[in-house]
Length: 254
Image (tube, rainbow, N blue to C red; front, top):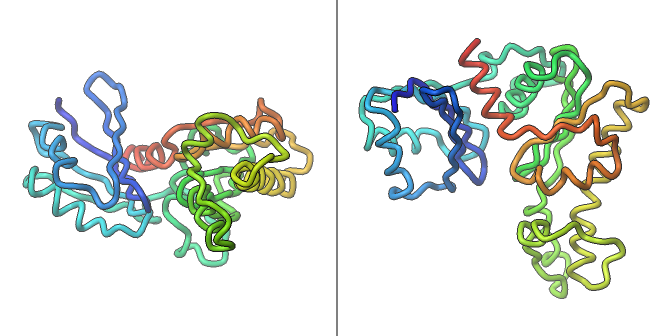
């Protein structure tokens, strides 16, 4: 393969990278944080020519460590770090320089895809961000604990409350309310509590619900999507995979 650019989103729990293949198709991969050396070995075969890695450091893992590992197998590659200055989006918040670049990248990608229509953008990852975007402007929003992080709080509340595996549970089915046992009660609090919070933010910002979209992305988006379609107009909810990656890609193109 001959690939000129690879885009990288360094989050809190995963390193997600994508590339556009010569035939125009897009390919995504994910690595755990920190990545193991054997997991980086396939990177040596991505292209026979030097590649530029566009890195968006959205989490806490130092991007320099990833750079060093890649250079061990591809010493001629180059690296460019995306900052807020690369994102052509107006930001209307108190401290623009402190906004997470992943939130801005998702907002930018959404405006490129859906235009100037009012949007609530949900990025459901380690944390769940709920951001308002309208008229090419990022207005801020809310940050909620992610489902997995929230599940870890229950044993801290009481030794009688178990740690529930969120991924395994939500992959099976949505929790039914009322929960008939402790585990189901916890799952109801996690799932429907998060769904209710997102709905409340949506209705606070867009009380008339006219032409307002809810854009859903992130690792836990697949779990939240069916629940949100039960409490908000399904035709106004859009699930977009890899919205942050698409924002990085569009910044490069810009």
